[in-house]
Image 1: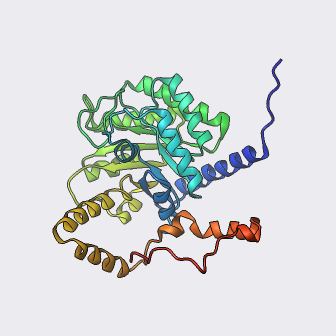
Image 2: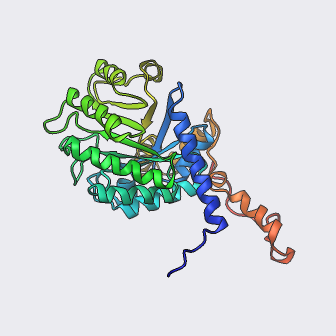
Image 3: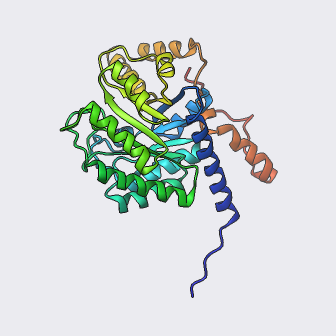
Length: 331
């Protein structure tokens, strides 16, 4: 008989820390106040959100696909690649990570395996879409959804898989039926109600609602907590409106990436036209920020390296930080 390896103290401690994140995420989702969840894909994004006072971070599959692999959000990125991104985010920040799990990477069998990998990687929760595979971005045309019965089976598998490892881990069912082939608002709401009642998911996310009144109706009819995505004419609903309508959270999947991409796009073209004058303007705008300068070194923990050296290294191995120098600050 093969002996079962004992759980190491480090592994047990990590599991407790991750479970604490799941518990915190579940708590803030169920409170009366609206939870704001910025999205992105890197530990630096998550740490910036943490420093700015946000209580959770969304790992967006579309941003992982685009920024790490240069691919569209059509189900090409593998479960293993997504799990590795989850692990980096969970290790790199103390706020809960709510992770995109696309369609669950297959049927209920695949969903079960995927959920447990996400739990072990340190996510606090995940969402699974009810689309067919290969999927399309939840913000794009061309979507097809599986049957409600098949989706319920997948969500039941997800809930059971999560409960085996962490009862606080949040399973979210995202309904993409509105705007999909043969889809519609009424059918989507009915699905969401079934997902909650028959699969016992923790959170419902109803996507692509084109009308403000329908958003309010969905939030009234679907058992909470519920997230809704508005896809109608601008302007977007205000945070006060989401709060008044009863949404559990407002998710912004590209909040940490889209502004940066546009900023880089503008800077590249400006630099090609004006050279270092463009750089000087960027530096001046950075220095004038009302929220202070975002310190790359502080976000990645450079100061901790010196503290560790002083605590553990013999004096002759410690670096001379006073008598040496590097580059002047760029801003």
